[in-house]
Image (cartoon, rainbow, N blue to C red):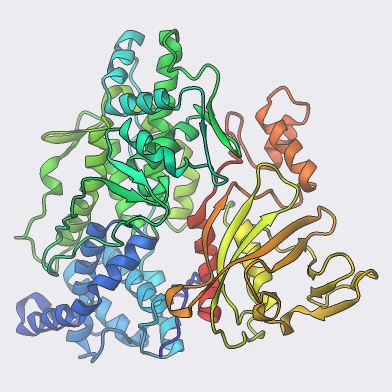
Length: 628
């Protein structure tokens, strides 16, 4: 059985040996038709798996199917140029010749094709479907990484118009978004109970969803939503969802409309979510006696928070997010001008040459239409003959794009000062044979409200591996000593051997010699992990569940969690709390110093309630080839 692999982040220069041979235009030969036919036939069995994988990590099913169309175009060139017998194993030389053949048709504009193929290689590696050698996988992945680099686009500046306050207020108040947020706000009233993860309790889901016009109810062992919509044939991008009278869910987050509006209230700082209760903030702007100016300010923040969420989703969408993100941002920016994008550009044109660049662009544009439709339903866009952004929202959109400008540098492949540290696991530490997967809850001690993560790890992993997983899950930079401890102060410690063990311990063991199955033997087993003996970050690790290997999916993986982790070297618990207080209060004597230390500009804020599971899992993927 093929070993699962993780995606590679390194870049290598494309290096051809001798002049590349340029075949004639492949559109005019029967061989390409045969190559396309073979590609479609060989891809067909993988469509359901690819769509489910794509929905878990990248985006919607319609985008997955659009991506598969592009992948089919690339694979057709592989099958044509070198008569490659498989679509699950390639060499770098084959990749070079296939992309040269694409350039004969597309010119130099093969970025979109390379981006889609990048995802396909990730899919093969992560799902254990790659049948070639490890060396070829890494080499092809690095080659496609280099091919998929995009130039930074230049977007026109959004010129925010001056709108009289009464006109702006009237425009906001007819928006479905404002009506829905107001309805949910009215339902919340003076406050509602929440779980430890900051979401509504199961018993409240039905009433909360009803305030938004959605039929849903919470149930612990209820019917679950389908992992993926029913798939049509490979030739169609249309996905049809079966409709249910009432959606039965296990979490508020499984109701998209409710989850989106709840997060909107938090992001716009209209509600405060504590460890047990969510309450409205004072002067939130939805009160009946709010002044027009206050209401306009609140509505602007609400619209901005929703637009920011869509922007963040694109930035976190993996390789395919690059071309889609550029296209969507260009369309929205044009929607704030006198020359908006015509709607006809988003219609799927079956008459376009399947091997041409316009066809690939058209596929991605059509896949983007779903997001624009959601924005239209909320009143954030107008889709008639053109894609237009209402003028009272131009300021919100400009705020979002300006805030994301630094992120876009990294998004389009440029160096960024805010990149996450890449922690390199010690690969000379071989895991033991795994017989099950452990579901571990890791919580920082002595903090209220709690900061925690739930991760899945194979029981054959060593404690030295778990160290790196914890570092990635909490975003620590790995620059300090650490140790594990079982049995309290005088129990057994497990360390890397980089320092002398505590004199109070009865026994110290080399952590790389200990498998997780040796210390987590039954549900409820506990272990303590301390990182940075100065700041003294103590983590309590509890075994919550033991899962069969076949049911656990890719590991390690973060399943859940709450709140952002403290910043490394901030001075421990009290230092972190003081830092948050100083950043929150401009009058605090340490405000300017702490803002500078965190790299924040005046007016920016730090949200301690933010929990970014996508970023955590992105960091954890680097360990899946060793432990998966």
